[in-house]
Amino acid sequence: MSFSGYKKYIEEGDLVIIYMTRDNMTPIFIKKDTTFNNRFGIFHHNDIIGKQFGSKMVSSNYRGFVYLLHPTPELWTLVLPHRTQILYIADISFITTMLEMKPGVNVIESGTGSGSFSHSIARTIAPHGRLYSFEYHQERVNLATTEFKEHGFGDIIKMHHRDVCKEGFQMKDEVSAVFLDLPAPWDAIASAKEAFKQDRTGKICCFSPCIEQVARSVTALEEHGFIDITMYECLIREHTVAPLQKIDFSDALKDAQERRAKGLPSVDSVAIKRKLCRDEPVPTADEIESTANLMLVSKTIGETRGHTSYLTFATFLPPSAIQVVNASSSSSSD
Ligand code: SAM
Image (tube, rainbow, N blue to C red; front, side, top):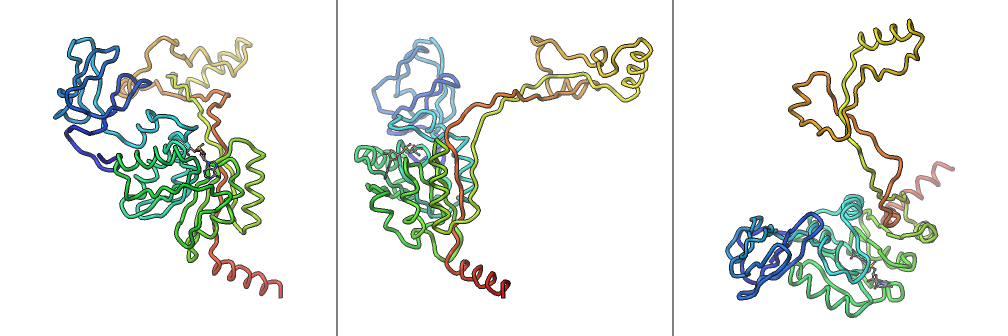
């Protein structure tokens, strides 16, 4: 069963994500002569075998239905067994982009934790890239190793059982990206620097929940010659979309003149600008298009939610580039 590919029909031994509702999904391995029960009824694995991934399946006692989804790293992040805090998709997608991960890239991550980010990294860098994942908790190493193998990432993810803050990564000239989700990432930065490919630039990210940790990581990154040190935070901002009637310029002018004649404030144009009532359904795109004077506007609410951690990014400069920078700065000061 592979998370990076896609197969059409469900077979015995496959992992299937059972989708009940948006907030209720569960992973199951298909095993002949067993059943899966939930509030929507009884589902026999024998009936699941041979069905297409993505199909809707009605329970054998007709109480309801579920969808049989193909596993992906995104779905796995939503259903995986939590052994630690994990990364979610908003941070995962941002970090993946900022660390310039793509097929063929070699990456280090530590710690492995519950393997949420590992699945997304492995899918992104497959088939030729390698993820070197470091974790010092023995049981988490064992569980992650088994899971990565079962999910078809056995060749891509290389698990290491090690305290990276004390013993380092023990790698030289190997990777283009490093991701540190550790309580003390600054202790692993010197060793990360050695692990970068020494003939090109590389990218590092430290994921830390509080600003004091960010400050220590920034100091360590500066001491080790990293450049472009930048901190981001991914937050959720809701957009409320509401339909408003458009006002054209001549109507607005007429409205303003009438208001002035009546001695009313000219800015208040509610007489023309009608906001639809809250419980009125938002019109479809077709309805909006056919109603010339209606438009959808979006308003953000002031409050932002979703703090997970601060993301501190920096760029590794290879020794050859540092020599060029030093030579040009000394010649310009001559
Ligand atoms: N990013 C992971 C995910 O998405 O599932 C979660 C990582 S979890 C928050 C942090 C992990 O780092 C824990 O499993 C912990 O055991 C491990 N860890 C902490 N300090 C470590 C160290 N010095 N060396 C290796 N692993 C370490």
